[in-house]
Image (cartoon, rainbow, N blue to C red; front, side, top):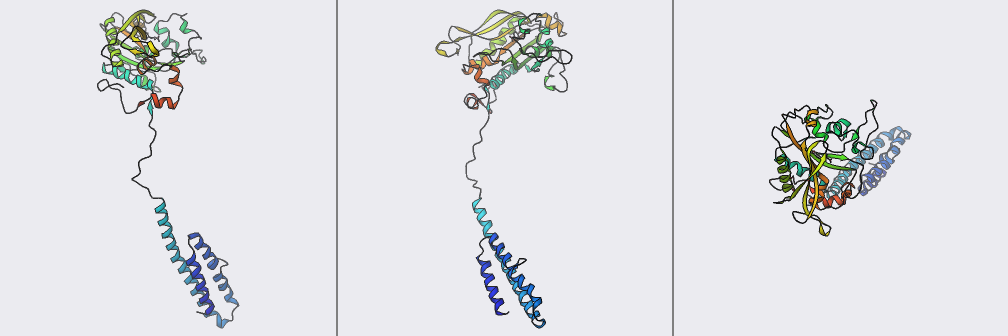
Length: 371
Ligand code: DAH
């Protein structure tokens, strides 16, 4: 190898060895071996040499080129190893670190209360029934014996939808009682709503929780709230069964050995006789305590199913009778969990829910405890 070439090799070798990263090494490669690199330029110059020098010079330059390439390749592997080692050290996963906390969802007090109601009635042999929030006049009013001029049918009490092409004016159901009608009529709500098809021949025991809507808004009334409808149809059902069932429910729901209840005569178009049930409580000191005191709080309406309802639903009133009731779910939740303003329930405030919500892992169960 000529002297100038071995000098070049020394120079290139130290440049390669000095490159500390793959990017720096690539710059060295371009400088020496690139299209206009120093070795490339020398090779290009071969043609200008006299023929007798060309061969030896060409061999020497190719040797230089091969040596620089080899050096770069070796250095590249070395750098890659170092870089990989650095990444492995920097990005190492420490499996001994505690897991990052993920916020777990909370069960809304209304959902919890509905689960408790369903668990109690489920334990008494009731099955769950459902119905649509958007109802028609027939299920919400007519079939339930509401007279034509009843105030609930007025625009100031009920949310009506724009009439459809057939002129029918649908509404947001004002109570869960239309579920009774759907159950007794064994209505098939269609393949689009298979969840509404719980319906079968009597005897019947169903509980139907759901949202209901009225034009009302203050601390104890929201335009949307919740009820749970109960319906029992059998051959020999009487008012005593209704009272026992609701008393037993109240004791289990409030988780007390004794809850004093009171039935007040009332009027509902779809029951005869009808009553409202109050629970005894103490309301002094801005708090509500169940099971003591001299105050009463209404938690439900109920009664014996009116024979007209049975006939409308294709059941013979001489063969079948039953009782029905409608529980105020939000009221029950307020009473049991001591939340004074109903509107807080539906504000969607995550901090409120974190405080008042329930663990998703505690499934209400009358045997092991409800809440
Ligand atoms: N639907 C009634 C309401 O919203 C509550 C009610 C009363 C339901 C008596 C019933 C019943 O099933 O028998 O005010």
